[in-house]
Each structure stands twice: as C-alpha cells, then as structure tokens.
Image (cartoon, rainbow, N blue to C red; front, top):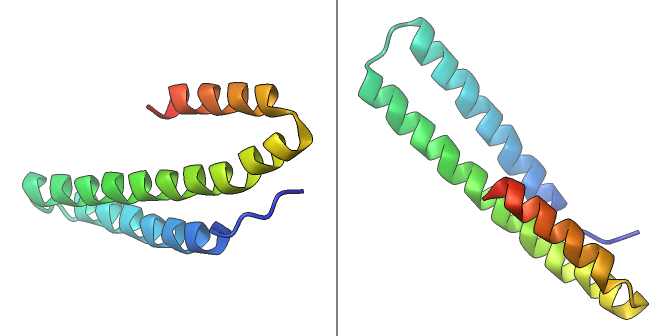
Length: 88
C-alpha cells in the first residue's frame, strides 16, 4: 500500500474542476459568448494539467520509491510510461 500525500489536494481540485464544468454547461445553455466559454474551457484544461502533475509527483514520491526499495522498478516504470503516453 502506497502513501499518497497529495490525494486530498487532488480530490479538492477535482471538485473545483467539476464545478467549473457545470458552470460552462450553464454558460452554453444560457447562450453566453463563445470567447467566454472558450476562456473557461482553457481554465479547466489548465486545472486538469495541474492535477495530473500532482498525481505524477505523488506517483514518483510513493510508488516509484517503493518500487526501488522492493526491486520491482521494471513493472512500475512500464506502468508509468504507459500512463504518460496516454496523458500526453
């Protein structure tokens, strides 16, 4: 079992992102301007990138550290590479 120090922060940020997504949906439904909607979508994308960074940092500091200690680095490295290829 890995200790992920940033899980609470990730969860809180995702809740804020969820609120932003609902706000954008409301903007679309109330026919707000396209530039305003696009600006909010850019903010959501930036927030998601920050969450991804936090999760990656957590993974490096906990999962990969544990893998190095246990000698199971190859499996964790492959999992990380696969996840990064999907993210990027």
